[in-house]
Length: 165
Image 1: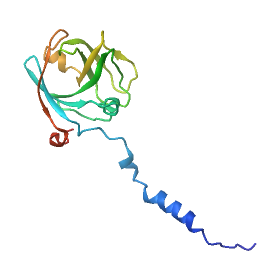
Image 2 (image 1 turned 90 degrees about the vertical axis):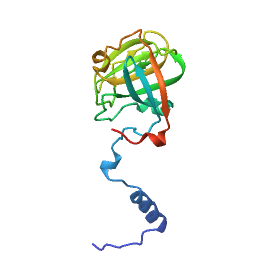
Image 3 (image 1 turned 180 degrees about the vertical axis):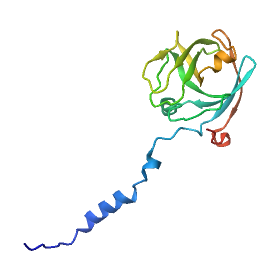
Image 4 (image 1 turned 60 degrees about the vertical axis):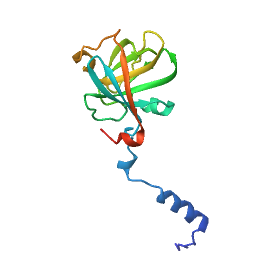
C-alpha cells in the first residue's frame, strides 16, 4: 500500500492555527471570583463593613461565586433597580453565607443562612432593593438583627478598590 501525502490547504492551516493560538492552559480557564467591583462602606450597629457592590445583572449573577475566603468585615451588597422579592441560592459558592434582605431605607427585613454549593432558594419576606451577603455567623456574632438599619457611609470607585480576597 502506497501512502500519498497531499499538501494541507492554507485555509485549513489558518483555521487550526487560530484554534491553538487562543488555547489557554486549563488553570486559567477555571472560573475566577470577581474581586474588582466598586466598594462601599456600610455601618450595621457599631460595625463598619466594606462591601463590593454588585449593580449589574452580570455582577449580581456571579456574586460571591468561586471565592475561597472572605475577610470577616467584608461582604457583597447586591443592588437592584427596583424593589422586588429577591431569591438567592448558592450554586458555585464555596463559603457559607448569611443574606440580609434590606429595604430601600436600609432596614433589614429578614436574614437567611445559606449553605455552600446548594440550589435551595432563600427569599426576602417582602420586596427589597438590597441584599447584603456576609460570612455565615457574622450577623449573629455582632447582634445585627431584622429591624435594624444599615447606614451607607462612603463609596470607593472600582479602580481604587484593589483586589482583595
